[in-house]
Structures are given as C-alpha cells and as structure tokens.
Length: 375
Image 1 (cartoon, rainbow, N blue to C red):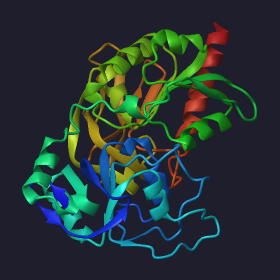
Image 2 (cartoon, rainbow, N blue to C red):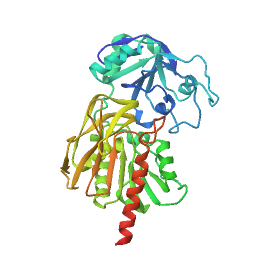
Image 3 (cartoon, rainbow, N blue to C red):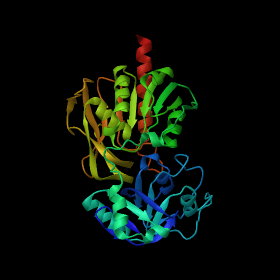
Image 4 (cartoon, rainbow, N blue to C red):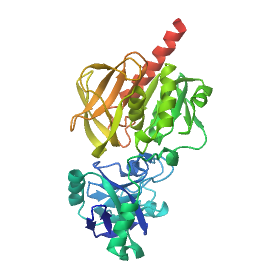
C-alpha cells in the first residue's frame, strides 16, 4: 500500500524489501539510468517514482553505482522487469533493493500518481508491505503525517564521508581541489580527477581551515539532499572561500548554497526537477542543453541583467535558465572567480550536453593560477 499525506491510497505489489518506509514522494522522468538515480545520495529521504513504465530491464552492475549504496527512501515502479537482459548485469534490481533494505511497490498507476504530484506538489508518503500492509488505514496515514517534511531538513551529514579521502589526478596535474561532499556522485569526482586535479573529498562538516589545509587551487561544492536554508554552516564556510577569492564551482545543492552565500534566497519548488531530460538555456551562448536534474529547491534571483550581490561579492548574473518553468539554473560572478549550475554536468546517466562545465572550471582555475604567478 502506498499512502500519501492527503489520504490518497494506491494498492500494488511489494517490490524489493518488505516493511514500512516514509519519505517525500517525488517523480523522476528519466527513461533510463535508474541505477544512477538509485545510488545518487541526493535522493536520501525521498520515495522515488519512476515515470518510465518498464524498470529493471538491464539489471544492476558495480561499475555504474554513483555511491556505495542505494540511497532512496523507497521506490515506486509500474512494471518491473521479470528477467534481466544485459551482458553487464551482475544482479537484478529486485535483489539489489532487497540487499540494501529498500521498500518498494510496483503495479500501481504511476501516471495517475505523477499527475497528482504535479497538481498538488511533492508530499510525504509511506509504503507499507508485508505485515504492515494490513495496518489500519488511519494508522498508516498517521505514520505518514508524523514524518518530517523536507523543508527545514539538513541531510548532508547522513550521506557525506566521515573521513577525508583523495583521488589522484590523471594526466597533467593542476593542483589540489577541495571537494565538500554534500552527497557527491562518483562521476563528478572522476571527471575532476581526469582534468588534472588531486581531488580531496572532505566531510560536510569541514571548516575553512580544513579546506586551507589541503592547499587548494579551487573549491567544489557537490550535489546533495535537503533544504539549503538548513545548511548555515556550509554557507558560512563558503563565504570564507569567496572572501579568499579561491576559484569556486558548485553544482545542484552547491548552486543553492552559492546563492545563499551571495545573499540570495531559496525556495521549495512545487514538484521539483528530477530526470535526465530538462531543457536549460545557456544565456551566454544561446545554446539549449538537455540536462540531468535532481532538486526540489531553487535560488531566487532576477533572470535578466546584472545585479549586485547583497553580501558584497560584486556583480552577479543568472547564467542558465530552465525553459520549462523559468527557474534559475546557474549563477556567475563577475568580480570573483566563482560560478555554479543547478543541474548535474557529470552526465550520469546522461546526457552529455553540460560536460563542458568541468572544463570551464579547469580554465577558471588555470587563469587564477596564471594571474597569481604574474603578480
């Protein structure tokens, strides 16, 4: 049984582990890439609904995981694959869900559920299977409404590393890069290492002194779950990074925290952007990119023109805009070496339109290094 906080109920079949799970019900529109979705730490605390009807056809493999485990709070699909058909598969999706204790449901009308979320907004829900499916309907609803809302939650501590780790640079080395792990995907780290950075992955609790200790040529804030308004400590550290004029690149959650560090507000979207087919306009080039998203919050900023940072970081502009709903998808600073985007340029599970952003960051760092050498 799937129960939403407004009392809506869907009856289906147990999928994955059995028991009870609670979380925010959101939908992801990707036609493929379910493994990357499931292992993306940004989905912590969320019950993910796949709008694509057939899920699990290609199984699971160890190479495509974006982290060490499945992070979704629960999983909703319409037609799970009865058998796996892919030469890279090492296990079925069902087995992986059971192994990581992820409670799911299948066989429901996912189109109806998606339309409800689109009209009413993301809301808390619960999946009850096994013996818990027989609980009284009022008891199930009470458990759902007693669960915490996503607004106000700081979840980065649940998904971040607890001890620093290092990925060595590949090819010609540029220098050390400090990565604040707020729920980082492995593909982001690999991309940064492949550009010549020794990637120092730091816990979300890292201080500015911890960042300075790695002698970084730049700082990267990752994607991650939760409400950016509940991450004051990370914003305070980021302001020290910006004050020091260290080159900065933030993605997804890192974009929202950059906005807050600049003095801008954030707000919760009605149903968010999740999937690998979101059209975004790069205002500098006029190019439209099809991009991968996973966010339920966004930055408040004027879409046109250049404005001054309320916190004194000079001229700022919105660099990218979502063409579906005009949501801010990127910020660029003119007076400090810093920029960010709201989406996932690491291209896992695709598409690859935004991969150039990693190169743009490398060029920003190299220009900063050259400027300092000239001084």
